[in-house]
Amino acid sequence: MKKQQILHKLFGRLRKNILFSKLMEKTGKDIKNKKWIFIVGCYNSGTTLLDQILASHPEISGLPDEGVVLTDQLVTPEDFNWRRMWWKCKKEMKNSEIDVKKDAAKVKKHWSHFYDFKKSYFVEKSISNSLRIPFFNKHFKPAYFIHIVRNGYAVAEGIKRKAEVMDGNPLYGNESYPIEMCAEQWVQSLQIIEETKTELDHFLEINYEDLSENPNKVINEIMDFLNLEKVDQDIAANKFQIHEKNSTIKNMNSRSISKLSKAEIAAINKVAGAYLTKYGYETLEA
Picture 1 (cartoon, rainbow, N blue to C red):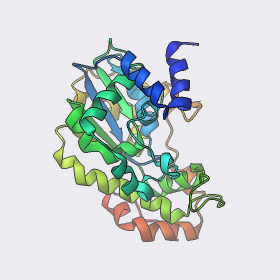
Picture 2: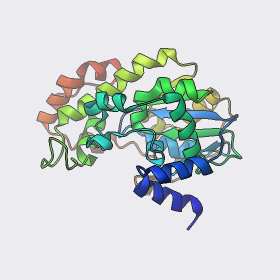
Picture 3: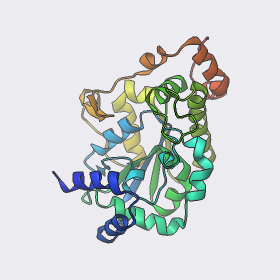
Picture 4: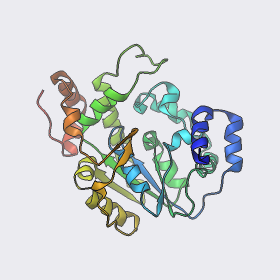
């Protein structure tokens, strides 16, 4: 087993172990003269797909997992028993963030075990990092932020289907979160990025639908944004590992939306109707 694979497994088991954290900090490298790419967006919006595509570029290095699980310096919603639902513990997460300048140095040391230093760009994708955009913009310069947006109906359905209600959560015992709560997570994700994007030096917004239907065009727009050479390969023909499944790029919206009941569509419309319209998505009839 490769060293990175071993460390990945150890972080999964010992992330909150103080001695392990200090060891990984002490043995980590200083990250200097690198450009950072932060993929932001809601759960089930194509962030993993975009991360996989970008990490396949010869000038971009990625992480084997979300960056938040490869350091003990950044809390996650799961730390507060809210899997795939950071808006329900937003206050607790923000109150847990300490000494951000010191944290940034430790985070870089932890992540350094996984990045390829021969490459000039480091990409990171953690959904809850939408709450930390100012932190990364300040301490990980130069930072390029790419926001990916997906149809809110498909996002809400995906969160409801995939988010296991954790033991310790007030909803524990239920099979899933209410669809209203999942739609609210989509809205909250859009709102927080809208609030912070104007403060960023480098910000690009794309959507999942364009990426899945015309990947070469969208990726080359991203290459222009990053000042990298355009790709000449047919990205649509490649397979990427998305949630432990190898697949070519496909638009899965129809499949997700078909699983929603009329009552769920009505509930999503009530919570997210204004944002569906704002981002150009057709409002479905319940």
